[in-house]
Length: 164
Image 1: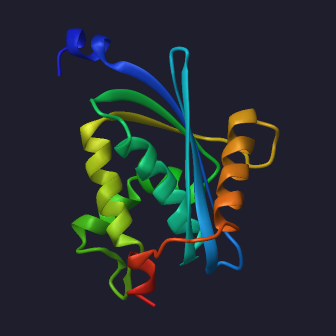
Image 2: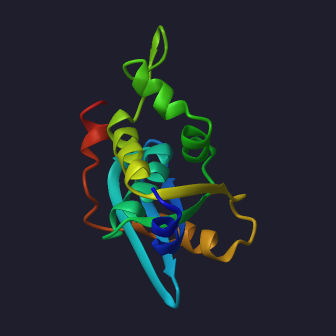
């Protein structure tokens, strides 16, 4: 990609969080997207899932919500999500046929496949933030995720329930 094209990408700031009550248990994700003066919140809850799945799903939903290629700074308090991309774990697992090591399969493959594809679509920088440390947008995402997990009419996390 040329420098001119890079300069034209919209810069979007994203905060995400996930929650599972009981882990596994009811779960949810929360997302805050910011672009210029615009701000959007997204959340949803699931009847049975894990915290790591909701952390990943929050990031995926945020990236999927963007209708054009963007330059994104994605903030998360999940080392699982951040390290999975920044340390190249997900790419290594995929290259090894979704195995973490010769005897141990990777988990959440359905979500990691989506995440890798979205990272190819967008220009994404990942930033870890300490959870529950007063970062306003991260705290808001936590609130959205927990509220969604405690909601009614929770969705089915097919990727988790089919695996269980």
